[in-house]
Image 1 (cartoon, one colour):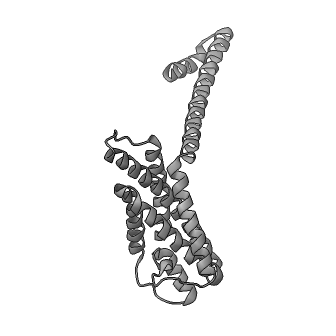
Image 2: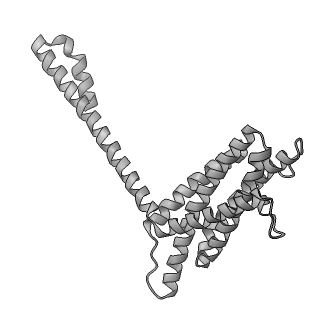
Image 3: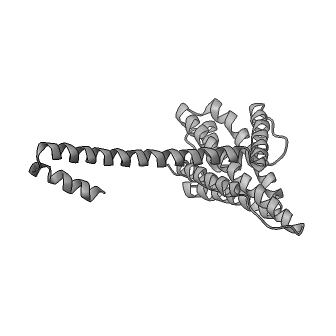
Length: 231
């Protein structure tokens, strides 16, 4: 279509005015049809993405994963705000990137004990535990979501109180990306655990399509959070 349009455009100088108008009109029609086709395809793609997100937000395991992480985040935030540590487990240090910012806020000029690649390794390992915990019928996934939510929540009050505006802003962005990654990967892990439980009951092993959608979204947010740690 394009080659024909270009050849017609090149021959316009050799045509009489009537033929020029006719050829120009045909070229305009072809361009309009091409633009319309592109718009229709993009609209259909947008509708598919919107429908996929709506389906995912209505997914039972997404709601459960969100409730576990945000519930534990709320508990951890309140414990951190009140400077209360109920157990000898240092929850606020289980997410090293936030622990580094918190230590720098408490002790300005201190040198971090681990480098940026260690932050990435910890974050990746936590993502693997959240997702792979679904193999054990989702029990490990539930525990990991609760502990990580508690850890992120316990870290933020000190950062917001003592860290500078730039460090606090970066920590909030990282916490948001990390939380989204864990929630979506937790959705996949819980759904995988449900599928394995059905298999144990001698029913067909089937994975919901939304499990894959949640995994891809979780992976995207995980990459973004890792980039935050590196830069």
